[in-house]
Image (cartoon, rainbow, N blue to C red; front, side, top):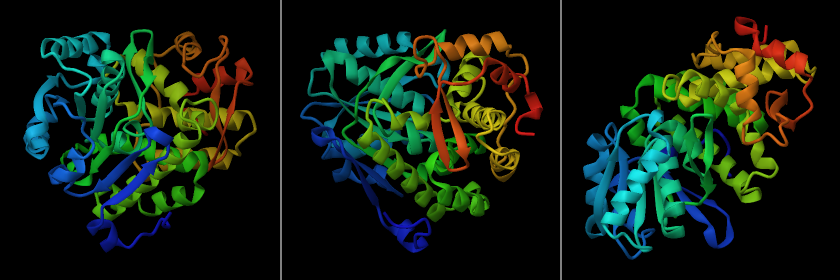
Length: 377
């Protein structure tokens, strides 16, 4: 792997190709500007049947025509869904099944996910379950999806009682990351994606974390070289972890830093009211606070985690005050990482070193849940 300080000209002019090493199910991740227009790179990963694009009513007006043109004769038709986390449910999956069945889509069909994390998760789950599994390709159009949800094969939908509780591990044929699409994203979406970026630094890459803070201004300004390098590092980190632990029985669980708290916040707040990355930023600060109370982190280290998120990258870090302790505990006990009713947490021993534990005294957990603006202070 190249170092964190890649030559800017190289990052701008070269398409990065990474590999998720899963034996027969291995697949490439392509990263670079203008990839939506590269016909051969996309078509070579399609099946023998038609390609069905699944997108939403925000992304489709921007990129649907280009992807249809790139697919050429392989293009079949599209399914355009409403935008938003509120539509990530079994009802939407059923609508996709209806369209596929009416069109007599067979096992040679390829689903093409064109959108953010919601579209990617929905499309992947539909592909995993339609006729017991058909091909799909990820074309993520948000930073959060590019650095996290499009890689690794986690697919699924939400349930009113828990986020991502219904799903499957199912890998795409390839991931196509066109960095130019980030130029159309609102600033809030960019920051939400950067929460997942910072997560990689916090769990096991302290040098990357330092590089991020030193380059925060350029990254927030969407400097192409810095963004490409950021995406490459995150995708390589996730590819390595997924190759070692595809089904999250050990190492991969560390990628959920902040998610036990964050998913509870997202569910309790109502899907779509807060962006996923915003709740993860809040959740990582809560994880750092709990780590401090358990004497895993020093007060200075915990404060540094909050400072990076809140000040260097201008993210919201204080969870909504109306969520009760009882609501947190109920939702977290239903989290995918819980075992036999015991909540398990990804915590920090240092900024750059995460650990998984289920040994958290209830009184200290409640102190974190009620800390509000006092988190990490």
